[in-house]
View 1 (tube, one colour):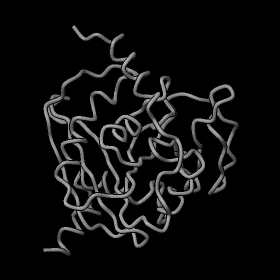
View 2 (tube, helix red, strand yellow; view 1 turned 180 degrees about the vertical axis):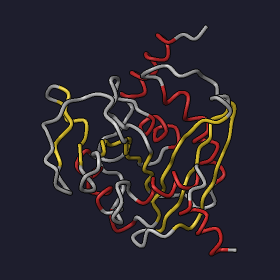
View 3 (cartoon, helix red, strand yellow; view 1 turned 135 degrees about the vertical axis):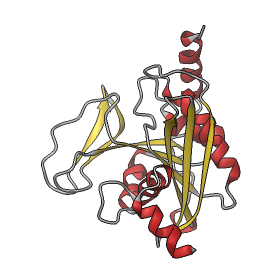
View 4 (spheres, helix red, strand yellow; view 1 turned 45 degrees about the vertical axis):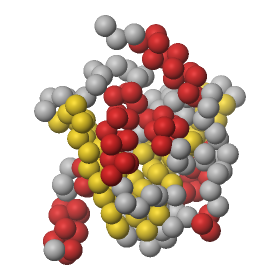
Length: 224
């Protein structure tokens, strides 16, 4: 029997430890990572991919993939407990530690302010930003259709992050700080890591590696 009440209380406690100030100097950032989590074998295996990109060139320099037995079923609002074990396993395999990590998922834009980007950032003690493809909580004013349209993502008087249309005719991204990054900087860092696609390069590469997409296949062939 899973004690969901205890897990929610742990989320609240950990959320109080999240640091929402910039803890990295722009000029010192040399490597930015992207992290993506998925599931295999009908959810029995959790797979995490981490891609390390050199900054500001955004070239892939390392990747790691970890597969671990899934420890928790899908429970709305508690997804980070299901995902972080594989993320930490991939993190421990890295040769090059990044200065900043983009996680495919929520940062503080979560009902208890602890999405997977915040949870992982705390456990790994690394600056993180959540880059999600859909909204979990918060409200925002309608976006216009232009590339670069942006609105604050808010919950009452609290700003959780940003809703940003990164590419024309594409659904917006939901960007929020995870840990050791400010709300304002979370958007700026993502904007600095774009290369004409909907997703920023770190998470685009992580997704390509996790799903063995043509982008990654070409990279492997070029390196072989």
